[in-house]
Image (spheres, rainbow, N blue to C red):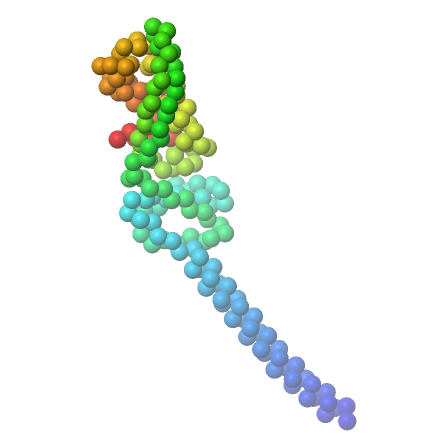
Length: 178
C-alpha cells in the first residue's frame, strides 16, 4: 500500500527535477549569450578608444572596427579624434597701457592623444578654459590697447595660440590647435 504510492511520487519528483535542471541550464546559457552580446561595440573611423579595466587605463589604443570587451570588467571610453571642437571664451582684461578691453575669442582644437585627454587630466575642458584665460591675460596684459583692437590682433592670436599649446603640452592634455 505505502510502497506503490511512494514509487509514483519518486517518479514525479524525478521528472520535475529534470525540468528544473533544463530550465536552469537554459537560463545560464541565455545569461552567457546576453553577457557576450552586451560586450560588443563598434569604433567609427574618426574615433579612438581607451579601455579602463577595473578603473585602470590599459596601454592599448582601440582602433576603428568591431570589438568585444567584458562588460562588468572593462569600461571603454570612445572619443572622436578628428572633429574640430570649439570653446568660446570672453573676458574683460587690463592692457599694458591700463585700459580695459573686452576680448572675445573661440579656441578650436582636436584631440591629439586620447589617453592623456581622457585619463591624465580630470577635467580637460576646465583645464583648457583656465589655460586660455591665463594665456589671454598674459598676452593682452603685455600689449597696448590699440594693438589689441587693430592691426595687432593677428599677432596677438598667434601668441595666445602658442601659449595655450605650451600649457596643454605641460599638463599632458595633448590637444592640437588646427
